Image 1 (cartoon, one colour):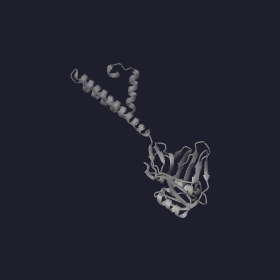
Image 2 (spheres, rainbow, N blue to C red):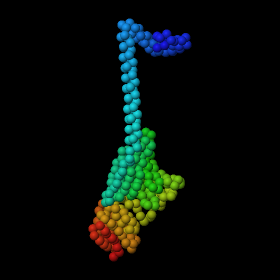
Image 3 (cartoon, one colour):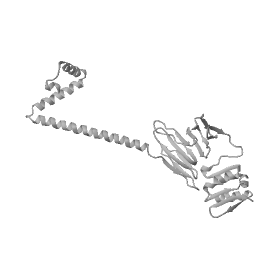
Image 4 (cartoon, rainbow, N blue to C red):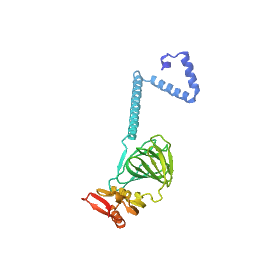
Length: 298
């Protein structure tokens, strides 16, 4: 308190008067302070000083509380950041079954038997990392602000959903994509040109993004509902799709694999599917133990 101590200069007094005149609230605050000072001076000697010391102690306590709250706030923010940096969620569909997953944003996934997937959401994106197998994605609108795109990432590139339903299958040398609704954008890691696929189109990612023509003698396997629907497909391709759902190894020799086959086969009941195949094609089943099955020409 420069004024009460008699240490204020003419410049200090001028600044003080200017401050009081600048705003009625300033003048009111000054009057309250002056009234408090007068009351303290009217107290017996020592008591006023004691009260001032108590007030100073309270101010120190208040400062300590503010500091503590600041530390708690910083700790809370750190905890929130840690929540965003935790390990991604992992999903795995065991052999012989599909897994259905609903994500935090409402998007729905179906993992084909043998598929492995990691899911990581943050403030910038919704990322699905496909490590093996196939996944069907039905995206939900994101209520997060700002909007976060949904991406499926594989070793060959990433697929950005444009409000859509689509399937992604990972092979050793490429990633295959089929769009059932709306569109997706394909972008290879190589930095090549991207590609937008519309509903009903197929494409693949490898060193580049390519649109694939639909074979006139084949239809997309409806594995999401547990069926394989084919027209004039190779038997070897059908057996390859049934194999993850079969207990043990399911194989097909080269002569049998080349046979054309049409029909709808159940992934959920591969034994019945094999019986239907042997009833319509010149093939037979050879079993060597409970975990080894081979289809050969008759």
